[in-house]
Length: 216
Length: 216
DNA sequence: CCGCACCCGAACCGTACGGTACGGTTCACC
DNA sequence: GGTGAACCGTACCGTACGGTTCGGGTGCGG
Image (cartoon, rainbow over all chains, first blue to last red; front, side, top):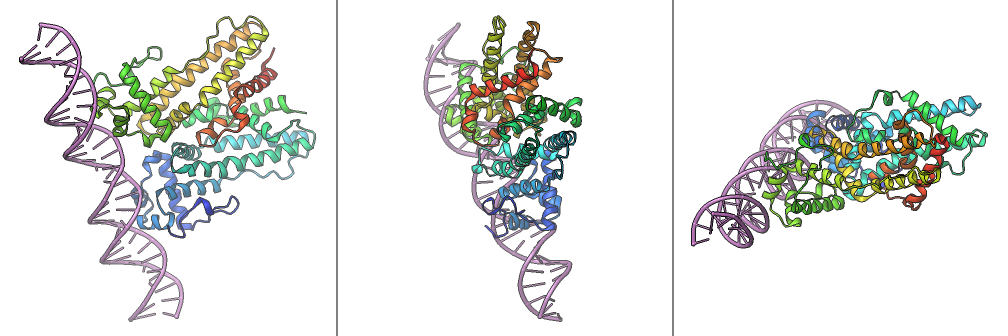
């Protein structure tokens, strides 16, 4: 395997793999193919044609097809950004608004076509390849987000705005109230209902119920 | 396409496709292969060898590979049974216990290896084949369960035990409180934590919070 | 005993795709 | 102008797998 090939073992959660600009363009093309047609649509020949690069380069950069898939997941995960939480606990009202904004951002990410495509890909591969993709997506995606959420919720608890025993537990409830079974239904290909597309009010509703359970 | 081939268009939600005993055995073998190795592990040659039948029979019975996959999903969905809800609203305590039992059964189904395997399969195929599998799984699985749940919850409301505007909405919340992100994490291949494996206490916790939100 | 229906096992075919090899081009650097 | 690295495009190879065909075997009604 070439030294430049992406390997999960050498990747740190903090340090981005730093793909070259050319490689990033190729990965964006790969992502586009994935979103449009699923895993089957991402063939090495097809990607080479679409991205105007040679198969040889693909194999030099990413090692093999699995390395390419892992690189797509890692790259897209590194692109996801969440709003900063600078000074969000000024008072009760702004903190609650901040929580709602967080939930809305979470919904926006999870319900996006790119996120859905990558989750479909990882889930479809989850019982092969010693499950590299699933691990990667969990590490770079869910766990990063949940740690962000925990610090936010604990900040609220320190300021006497929330009451709970375990931040992880509280976050899980917030997640469940917001996502419910919509994520899985979207993953299965069902279209979101109009109400479910209104992320803002969905988030407000979830936060409302969350405060009924955990508000101080 | 042979007349005996499974076709989603001719299948009714109520009438099971009624596979012959021999075919059911073959479908069980197919399911086993799916659970063990994912979609890639279910090849027509491999299934013929495992189930000691000929490929010719597979194609006669199920039309093609997609028909086989659809048959596996339909068959397994028909096997899932939920506890009856006969006379469950006798008093507040038994009704609440009944709700908890329902949630526990739901968790037991969704977290089972067979359910996970079929969900992985359907999700992996959700952007191909005009998405037959996803539709099938939603129809035979989620929607059946949710209608059962709605009638249960509305029964509780009629007896003055619960308070909500829309049963579907309330059920979604109950689902979210119980499942949270565990389902997706399991689909991605993460192992369930010890606490998450205790379905009974997980269900109790969810129902507890549900009553805080919707108890009369 | 004959024919028919059903089925098994194995051989076979076509193709799509992962992976490799190679000639030709661009470009940076000396 | 020469040299080498990087890369594109294309042709090529091997194989796995979906799907078909065929020979043979078993049970059953007439």
